Length: 338
Image (cartoon, rainbow, N blue to C red; front, top):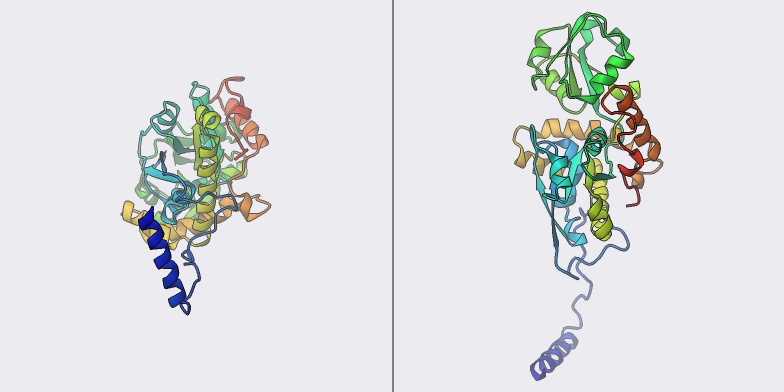
């Protein structure tokens, strides 16, 4: 205690000696977005370790989550988030439901399907409001709308929920459905072929190979699941609501930062996934921004969900045969309070 008093006195004396020195506080880096007014001080308590499991390899569709990490928005809320890349067959929802990871990323239709299988996961944030899912066709084919899909081949995986919806809504006269090979090569070789795609990915690749892609957006048919949805377990929401609130807050600000200033985050994503070049990532961000902001009344409403959208989606899955009537309560599939 005596040594501390002596040290304090010395420091106070030094302050008078160097009275001409600046007393301004060091400003935070200008490239960091401002948190909410009640954001906690990151030095007030230890960081909480959580995991965020992605549904695919790092791409633009995960940009806002990576931006929250790159710009320190997780740490600002006492979170140390380990972002785990996904890939083919990775059971993100099952891993969240079992408690293997705290948070995950998936699409709204998958939340409903897995809840029907008793996976108690809940959507808490939906950054991509309008689905990027599309059918990519050739401009030279003369196809300009969904009703033109006839006398052709469509490459769509059988487990895609929108396929059942297409079959219910469209005649698809003389249309052969084949599995999607995960490449645009077959598409480029056949002018009478269309394929499943995300509007921010495969069309860019097709254009790079001198193709002539045209996107028929599945959302124009009315099938419009929230995409890249953040999920967690109901138990986490019940027992750790502040943890969930801090996670959602950081992700919302991260997505806002990514949509407005994606360059630094895209460099980080590229370092994690070399197949995602900076050019395609920039294209992806430009394509995603209007999809993320679709229907929002203000930029800070990013990620909000409505009961009407979830109910409509559940009804569509029942209509297309993906869900049995009454198998899931859409009101319990999401929590918009965060």
